[in-house]
Length: 475
Image 1: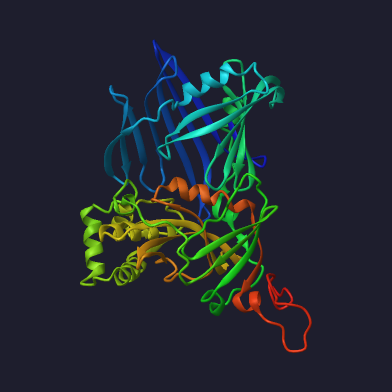
Image 2: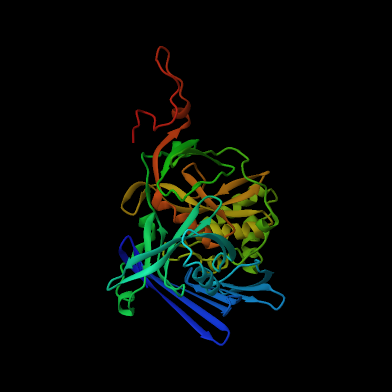
């Protein structure tokens, strides 16, 4: 299959299905030409599913170069039905056992379920698909739209059009698939960075023809309607944003420093404070535990945390010291890392905002301070050759003083130029999911506290100035 983004070839995918007796092995290899920091960085994701001929899951694996090292997740169904997971991230191997979601299927199970509904247009059915990258089962609502003629580079095929909808807490993802009589995918279409991404079956020569690079950062930059001064960033700010992607139900999240109001018709008001709101729920046990990306039990990370914390006992003071330490610990900054785990960052001492965040979160957990990672955007006066923009960003929230408080070692401090989109435990799946929203977000106005609530001068007509950019909408 060739992979196109708005008609521009960015890669290819190969799907191989092999059956030996009662065992079916499906291998999917996705290759995309991603650019990081204006350098080509080929991205290869290889996933393998092993199932019975009836579609019963047996095992799976997925490997990808999330950073300079390969990340690999392997799952094995045990005789008692449970799932044994082995995660290898940054050379660190972790094993765990969990319950396999009842009714969840892998690739062959999905193919058989979709094949069974090909001749039932108008049908809706549920499909519980296991996502290897997020290690979660996802409930898909599938609609059978009926047979359609699909044009390929050198021929036309009559295929079954089925639409998968994945409902997330703040958004939904829609994937359109066109299947042949065997249930094999011949064409797929979804949204990436606000653009149409299509995967179309073609010859090997067509699929592996040269691709053009996709610069993820350039595609995710959002313009600011006005210059935001240091004084403004140090105080309350209210943003008016428009989201063109109707599948995004709630693109921004409520935090202890951010409140979000749905104004309708894709319009949103985001208010960012540096004071206490207490909107977010208290921490859970998972917020202080290590995981594959935040290896807070690693001796190296525990040692760094102890050195940075010193003899401080107050959680707020400890977090301040950890954040300052991480800010100076990374000796090389760059966008060509990808997404590294905390242990990789501790060893290599290089990365960008995501690497600062994962290391700080892991060090906080090593000090028994609950911590999570926020994926969002940050204002900057200049990025590359663009002025006054918001760019993808990551920082940390930690539970101190009975609230979640933000710490940003990459920017040295948290200010109201930060807008939060998602919260995660360090799994890059959340980060990339949030970044995918950027292509459909437009910020229309930014208002200060004074502009939002300024009372009219004596003798002036009209009421308080609510919303807008203030100063006559100056930009």
